[in-house]
Length: 299
Image (cartoon, rainbow, N blue to C red; front, side, top):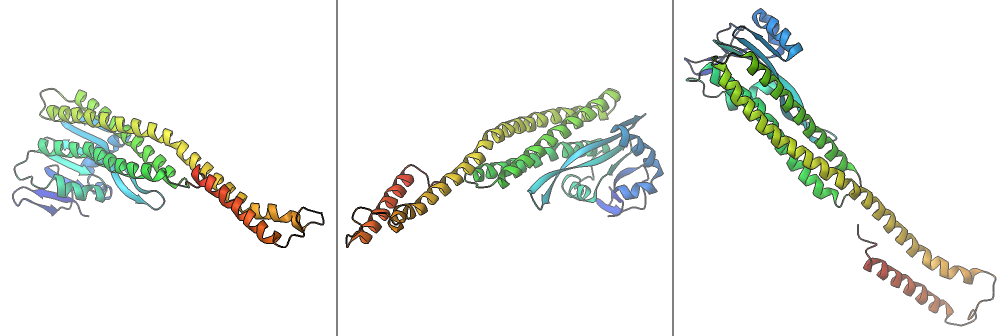
């Protein structure tokens, strides 16, 4: 992806050779080396997450993404989006997979939009990314919770633990975003046109953080409660195996004495063998019926 510049006259994105500090630009980390105007500000921002110099503001904010893991399925991943704002320009620096949906969904119609409005759109997109990812994780958690009730292994539990960890990382990233926005708000003069934009973004961040944090605490408590389900399922497996072992051992236990060199009652009876078989299978059937009635075969 080449450096993208939004041409307001044409109303479209065009390729640009470099950042010119006038207009809206989308850049990848590889293209920053060709932009000496951005390199110094981004160097400070990489260390502090926030850099303010006169009318320039540089923010490095965490963004939540979804990705497919071979072992755990859909999981969350944290990336970073860097914003360099001046009164005349806005440079957005990030991975290509971050810039493309941002360009298509949030920065589609910008012909009449001011640079401050564009900054607000990007800030809200960063904040809402955590909410979107949290919703997907919650849907997966609900499915895994239902599957965990009848699970004989701990695959679902491992996935639930990973998703709970991802929800915790979302909460941490949202808090980090709130701290960065709060510091940026303090460093911005009250008469600056950027001040109300940062204030709105900070209020929205607090609202999203409260919701995601509540979801995380709830599902963390539920996961701790569901840990016993896997243990109960493991006990059920051993219980069923024990019952089947007892059923298989019953014929042997009853027939074995008649194979010993020991005088036994009715050993010369003509129908002893048939009576013994009927007795063994009858007792086995009664034991199996009793075990099924008491739920020993319920998995």
